[in-house]
Length: 349
Ligand code: AMP
Ligand code: MG
Image (tube, rainbow, N blue to C red; front, side):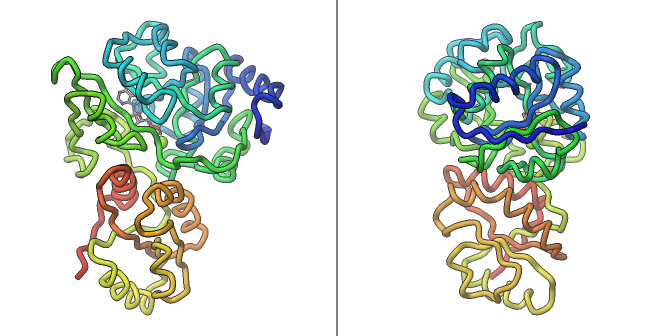
């Protein structure tokens, strides 16, 4: 298959390109496109064949459901049973990086929801994503645009790396602003009339959710590893994810211990290091990749996935990084890094 790569910077001026992408989606094809979180691999969410194509292209297990992307929060009515909690969340966070799990209506095929009776709904704020959904006139099912298990793509270059020749079109609109996938919550009336469970942390933080909903539970597998026979509410949580080719090890300790531990490792091993800007001058200048200033979690989040992919290009034997704090947006960064590291943490002092 020949993949068209189209640069779109202004969806209004380039409405013909947007229309072309939307036509491909409506005709059952696949288009990778930018969102404010990461690039998505899009198909018509109401077409079982499109969803099947998405799973095939990604190599994704077909029990791992897809998020459906809508243009306006109220568009959810056609595909899901909403309630007052959904609209409270929508009022506060949509359009934006929040996904809400709701009971599904018949309009969404089981192929899209991985066989579940629920559907994940998101209304992205990215102008190109918004324009494409509007022009398509159908919700766009879109998982992250990466081969299953690899770090999510936050720039079109990595989408091309994974999907050139496997999808109809790739829309290039530069780097994604947030860089980590959306926050996912499930409304749970068993908790209370304003109860939600946080299934995946993202740029809409736990604290922000608490300002809108009375009861916010954090799913235990956000921080810890799943037990062997444990089944998460969000099927994606059980899969290996975000992993670079070399093993990633997270170091838990202060900055001084980080430097002294790694100075030694650099002598003995071909190691890549994901470090803060402040660490650069203190380490040997080999295979260092900065993810941003120490206190700047937004920059670190934005860069994480591309740095993990750059690590692959350097072919180290092992990759080291700081274990992030879990405050605010830090919880999302922690969750992605701990999974990329398959929960390998070394305590250093
Ligand atoms: P990705 O598409 O790569 O951002 O991953 C989507 C995530 O949403 C996966 O972890 C899925 O398991 C989760 N998800 C999608 N639909 C549902 C659903 N109906 N119930 C629970 N989790 C879902
Ligand atoms: Mg993904």
